[in-house]
Length: 256
Ligand code: DGL
Image 1: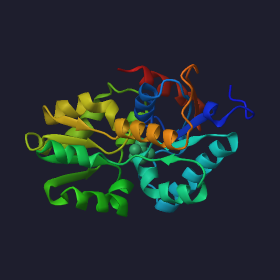
Image 2 (image 1 turned 90 degrees about the horizontal axis):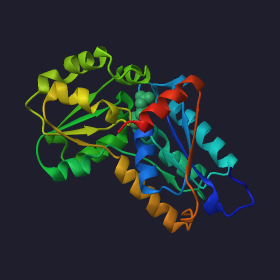
Image 3 (image 1 turned 135 degrees about the vertical axis):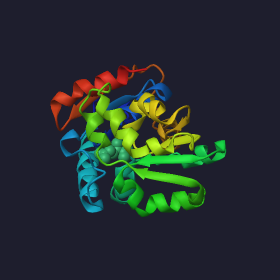
C-alpha cells in the first residue's frame, strides 16, 4: 500500500498499454527494478489502439496517465509503441514534473547487429511521423516494414496456441522466409508470439524495446532521485478496463 505521506521514492510506477502487451515491458522493468511498486493498467476494452486515430489514442492515454498522476505515481511508463508515438510528447507537456518513459521499435540494435531487417508493428505506429524519423535514421531502405492489423486481437484472446496466430503470420509474412535475419517486434504484444514467428520465418534474431525501456526507466528514476530503497519489497498490481483480462496479464507475466 502506498501512503501519500511517505517519500515519493516509496510511491509507485504507473504503466499502461492497450491491453496485455505491456506485460512484456513490465517483466523487463521488474527484473531491472525489483524493489519498485508497479501498477499496471491494460485498456483491453479499447484494444487495439493500432487501428485508431492519433487523437483518440492520445485521449485514452491522457485518461490513464491522469489517473495515475492523481493517485500519486512517481513515474509513468507507456508500455505501448502505438501510444508512445501518438501521445508521449503530449503527456510530457501535460505532466512536466513526472518522468514519462515511452517505448519505440528497437531499430537501433537491429541495425547494429547487421543483416536484413523486418519490422512488425501496428498500423498506427508505422503511419505516424515518429516511426518515419526513426526508420530514416537507421536505414529505412534496407528494412521491410509490415503493419499487422488484427494480430493484437488474436493475442488478447489469450490462447497463444491458437493455430489462427500462425495462420495469420503465414499469410502476412510467410513469403519473407529466408529473406530476414533480424525481426524488430515493434508492438509490445508481439514478444509473446516469438515461437510462432520463428515457425513461419525460420531462425531469426528478435529485437524489442523492453530492456531498453527498463534501463531508461532506471536512469530517469536516478536523475529524479526517485529510486525505491533496497529494503523495499517490490509489488505488482494489475487492473484492466476488462477486469477478466487480469488473469491473462498474470499468465503472461509468469511465462518465461
Ligand atoms: N501493444 C501496443 C503497441 O506496443 C498496441 C497494440 C494495439 O492495441 O494495437 O503498439
